[in-house]
Image (cartoon, rainbow, N blue to C red; front, side):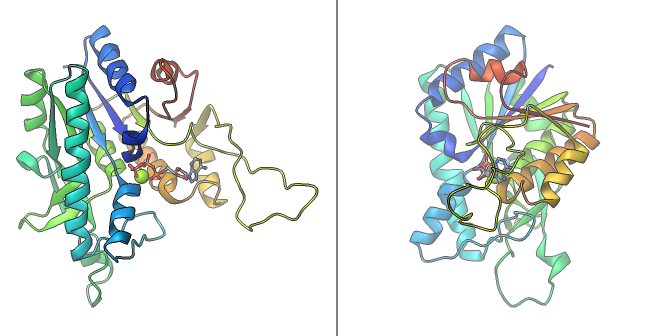
Length: 283
Ligand SMILES: Nc1ncnc2c1ncn2[C@@H]1O[C@H](COP(=O)(O)OP(=O)(O)OP(=O)(O)O)[C@@H](O)[C@H]1O
Ligand SMILES: [Mg+2]
């Protein structure tokens, strides 16, 4: 079975072109006789919701969200509730038979907390519900794909005892891509690709911040060495740091290329897939 995987940023739901994007994914896959899986994020919506509830979204230096017990409930509400349902209903509008799934459904993913390993004696519940993937099982996905359903998967997982864990959606996309031995993995984010250069300092006034502001033109192609260099220089940071680290992990385990881009107008996905838009990461 020819399978493609698209990881959609949670912010895609605010994108006015979302229906065009879903149709373009569906048309493209049908045109090449492929089935496809969608993995979605939702970090920005979860942070907004958590702040509204009085929680303080916290991340480690690698860009992992440190999910507390209260935030886990919020994560389930936003990722497995709101975003999952909205995406499935948008799919319905364009004729895609989607099934919204948690990573834990059908034993698809088994995870473990990252905190057990790093801070066993910590009293804070911060990070207690942050998971990392231990193993993936493709059985449920195969059943769905074989029967022409499109799985739409969120990052709500659990450990082997059933404790709820929030894993990283980029990590999930990469793990599934590796398990499916995919040639390529496509990330649709809220940026046109990886911004790889710092902007020149304005000549008239001093630079407002010590952190270099990236220019708006993404690098068309980057290899492992350049990605690691951009991370080192902090030109790649926050969510993109996690995404690119996971992309390098996927490349190391057999995925040939990882594409990162956004969707602004009809046809942008085709341009991304043909390397005429966005950034391609390769070894
Ligand atoms: N060099 C860079 N080039 C592009 N974006 C960068 C760079 N460094 C940091 N970023 C940030 O990374 C963000 C993308 O990662 P983020 O985790 O926010 O989105 P996502 O993974 O697509 O969505 P979600 O987390 O909802 O799944 C961009 O919005 C940008 O602010
Ligand atoms: Mg992200």
